[in-house]
Every structure is written in structure tokens, then in C-alpha cells.
Amino acid sequence: MKVLTANRLSDGIAVWYADGGWAETVGHADVAYDKAAEDRLEAIGAAAAANNEVVDVNLIDVTVINGLVEPVRLREKIRAAGPTIRTDIGKQASPAAARAA
Image: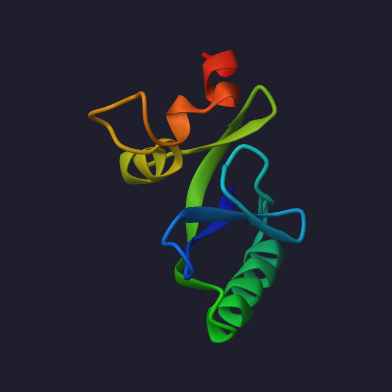
């Protein structure tokens, strides 16, 4: 399983393709379950990069746990959560993250 991730060009925030746009959280990203779906996501990412919406477009490996998408690699987990030294800032400090913990 893979999802499409990038960094938004306007502010550098890590984003994931979800529901026809770019979301700031990975939890509900569109998941590619086969090669055709991966190719579709890659085309979407290439078009967004060409339109200067995002940079560093990549497909990453994920798992789905309790209905939410979670990155497999540590690097991507950190991009999804935010800084590792201060949990009071970044995405992990959001009210939604506190409720999930």
C-alpha cells in the first residue's frame, strides 16, 4: 500500500494527497492498493509539481491501522508528526493528535 506525499511549495509543510487535494495529515490519504492506483497518484503528483503546488513528490509505503493511514518508515512518521524533540509544537500538538493518544 502506498500514498502520495510532498511538501507544499508555499510554506514547505509536509502534505499528503487525499480526497482530491493536499491534506496536512496523513490519516485519510488516498491509498494505492495496486500498480494502476500508484500510477494514477504519480500522475497527480507530477501535475501538481508542474503547477508549482508541491515539491519532493513521492509515493511512500503505509499501513492502515484502525481505519487510519500510517507511514511505515521512521522518516515518514516524523514528517507526519512533526519535530521529535518538542511534542508541544508541530502536528503532534494539535487537538486531534491529543484525542488520538
